[in-house]
Length: 356
Image (cartoon, rainbow, N blue to C red; front, side):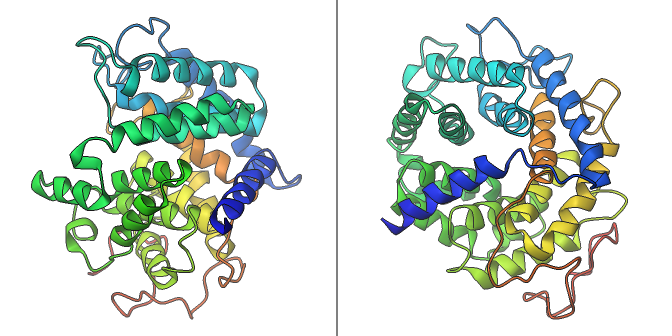
């Protein structure tokens, strides 16, 4: 019951605070119109022939469709709606939900629409239910969650971890999304097991030198804090946060990547307190990288998914957010914050990977 009460309060606060803008904050005023332009771009890129696979192409100019992009892209539209109350964003998010419910998971039909293991779709449907007050979205999300866990590779966090190791997919970022989906669906046993995997900061398979390093750090922080594990794994969250700060460059985001920077912002804002200033600075860099058409280029390509993630990141810096109680709010981290794993101070905004 305690978990349920805390979760209900967290959702209430998330919706209540999502649209708050503090007058006089120049940085927030600059990001506000950027969110509107970017969300309009995502709406423009949405496909209307919903019978095919997905509502967005993988990248602009391609003809490849991936159904696992639908929910994660639509989350950006939903956040934009909560921030700006633009009904166009909500309409597009509802269309994405219609596709998810008609064609994915338990509704999969034919060879085009396969049973999917799309945790972001589950997360999106839960948040859409909260935003609209339509409980049917949440009911379907729970159905899809247990549909996913009916497959042996996803039946437990341990099974998923074993699968990832067998195929060398060192993405704890994915496991973090599954943790969030499990938590929102009320499957706390699954969530607890996943949280333990995320909190194993000594596991070099996920936290070593991988292509997902920054995304893994950010995903783990967001899931552990957002799903109520901050007290249980407090030291690990602080360690992960330090490692994330250490790869955040003041003038170059997180190693110059839009997606990595977006998730770093969301993670830091989820922590709140002293991490907020770091998130805001990264968000300013992110908004400065927007293309004239309202999207972002990642290594020369515009991905609707990344557009959605960038919008989510910027909306996170507009309103208030949660914080770990024992982290005192201040403009920047003080000298008592240490990199627990390496015994060195964090190296914020140096634009380079720290000596490891």
